[in-house]
Length: 192
Image: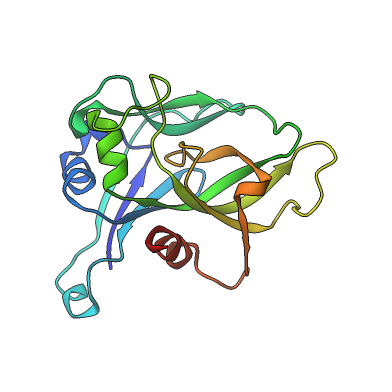
């Protein structure tokens, strides 16, 4: 599997990542911690795996304040150069919502279509991404059926999975067994 290990990386500074995001239909972003993002492509077969290498790119960007998370944002339509890695504020979950720390996200052509304007995003700027697997880190008041520590996945709306964390409607996620690798789970959800 081709892995690209990044730490707080500005996408404009890393044209290889921008090219991968633009040309490929299936990638996963996996947060191994709040400080690192791993981009992997499950579309590469095992016979090609030996020909692929690890690329490490470390950034000197400062850590985000505690109420902020990093997200890939789109402020204008265009190619991969419009993707911005920036701080976004994330609140606490409301009624019927959960806060999820994304461990792996799927990337596919619908994300490129929104970025290019083929499909219209409801807001601008926006955080792309419509599928993810992550750990529940907070639940809204009175919510039952989900708890902190649960591994969950979702596909479809709401958009916004290209972020370290996101708020999701609890009824839009499915529980996953804790033994499943989040990258594998996100790849499966992407294919469904």
